[in-house]
Amino acid sequence: AASIFDHSCRGNVVVTYCQTTRTADGAQDLAPWILVARAAARVRAGEELCHTYVYPFETVGERQDRLGSAYGFQCECERCSVEAPLARQAKAAADDLDRAVAAFGEARKAGRPGAMVPVISNLHEALGRIATLSRRAAAAGAPDGAPDLWRAQFVWGYHGLAMALEHLGRFDEAAEAYRTCVELIVAAAPSSGYELKYRVMLVQCLARRALAGGAVKREELEDVLRKAEDAHGRCYGGGGRHFVTRLGRRLEEVYRALRTQSIRRAG
Image 1 (cartoon, rainbow, N blue to C red):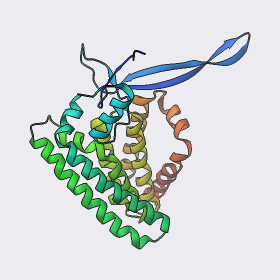
Image 2 (cartoon, rainbow, N blue to C red):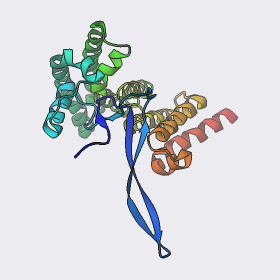
Image 3 (cartoon, rainbow, N blue to C red):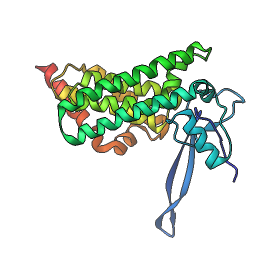
């Protein structure tokens, strides 16, 4: 079957589905799902509209394999062009990073905080090697923003690092790791549900830091919350009320932190 939008591993369209209601003979019923497409970034006149057919945060080799298996083609988008020259190195780096992330899961399950320290060190080392490779990609004449675009295939590693740091209560460092996640998502999948996810995780991390007695400016917390709400609007629409309804309990820590900050300021 033909697709409405072509594929790109760096899509300029975000596709969501919305189910509406219809009224017949005085009774409400669920209507069919409606496809909703929103521009993920500024679209130039005449530019082809594309979204991503596969999970966008695997290595370029894994994405190409999935596209070939499921859809019978290889992607030649700008992002793949940036990543392809170092595809072999990316696979090796992903294997190293996967082992480090798996070790985090084992340490967390064991419930031994001391075991988390070497895990964090190994994650930093693996991600440091990835950062070095990303600079090589940029030096090869890739377009502006190439380092972030190249590193986006490893966003899950920065996520693992952020969670490990949070586990030890190192909220300042965890927040920086979540900020990196946001930057990489914005480079590869702006206005997507993934951007919303990591912006909300950053808000929650800052809220936990505040609730633990750490120094967090109320303005900073409000700013990252506004940016999360904006990401929700670009992906799903519906305004602030829809944002609060969708996230529900995930915002409770944030509200408590804001109240705490107000009390501290008043005191």
